[in-house]
Amino acid sequence: MAGAEKRAMPDNSTDQSSKRRKGGGKWQKQQSNKAIIESGDWGVFVTCDMGREGKCIAEALDLFSQSVESASSNSRDEDSGSDEDEGDIEAQIKKEIEGLKPGSAKPRQFQAIRMEMPCVTFIRFDKSIDPEKLVHEVCLDAHANPEKKRCRWVQRMTPVRSIRKTLSVDLEAFAKEILKPHFHSGGSPKKYAIRPTIRGNNKFNRDTVIKTIADVVGPEHSVDLKNYDLIILVHLIQDTLLGSAFLVRQYIHGSTLRELESRLTAEDRRELDRQLGLLVNMIGQHTANSFGTLEQVALGSGTSSWREAFLVHFESILRDSEDVFVHLPYAEIRHQVGRLSPVLDEITSPRLVICDFGRPSAVLLDPVSKQLVGIAGFDSALWGDVYMGEIFEDPSPAVLDGFASRDIDCEPDLIRQLLYACYRSIHNITVQYYRERNSAAEIEARRRLTRVLTEMAAIEVVETRVDV
Image (tube, rainbow, N blue to C red):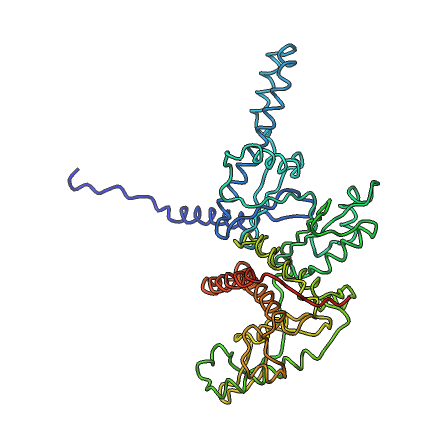
């Protein structure tokens, strides 16, 4: 109507604001109460490629739900014959009605729990569903029907029957509880292997876990890493209360060699290489009575064979790669390393070696004088062959002069350098999947690994002296 005023809207801004606040409060409450893994849970750890966790969760939930429904329908079909004879239509209708009443809903069978790390998700199972049995049935079905593609994003499923918090768990007592039915309930001795996986946890380390589990198993059972009867999988994932580990150390003033390399003269670089060679020689003067990591040797669990210690160390980095599904030619790598490893038997004296020694990002220089002021990266130290240091991968004459060593030109020395270069390349690839990914560094490491494997494959005969 002309001239008429439009009806004013009621002033409900306060109500709407209140509604928004209520909704927001509810959302925040839901976020703060997100599901976490608790002691006593069981279920399946599922891994996938980085960035595909959401799709992996949806796929895993569908897969497990379909498997349970399929098993239930098969069970009903088997019982249908007897039910038809004794069936009571009135009782069946009553049962259906009861199922429709409020509060009669079945408990949630599966619950996805996102981890605070990439590539891993935990699917919690209801206690009525056995995770080991369900995953086994899924695998059997996949093997029987290879043409049937059921997963695109799921890469590995690891069923878990028991979980404990690492802050309060007694690992030895927990291991006894889990392993008793398999090792201490009668029967003949068994061959076994232990495969620990530790991610985001700073209370336990690999060596401690292996030693504790082996002590629980007992000496009556033997270790066989290849032809085992049973394999013990130990997964330690996250430490939510302690958070990340920190290393407190004295601050060293200086810039890295990577930053200053372009400003060094030829004479500066020769002097620096000579100092690095002298320093690695001084570090290598420290010896031990066995080979292995610093902790292994300190605990008396080192080995008298450098070949054995290196292969164990090498296998650990391959396992780390496999755990996050890094694409590598694993069969070829293991074949070449195993074929050429006898040359390591020539190393009979365990010497202190910093595997990353000489890496430009770990060498600190004074920005003005260009003199060496510090070395970082001592976390890669072990008792082994001093030539495993990165500085010997392609040493300059000045490095060898400072180290007081001959050129690395005989065949056994060259083969050992190829083995060490292979290890470093795989390490440099794998570390990209555990930290912020650097695509350029990964590509360069992959190129280096390809060249090393080609050179290793070209070696036909290895003749070494073995000290018994």
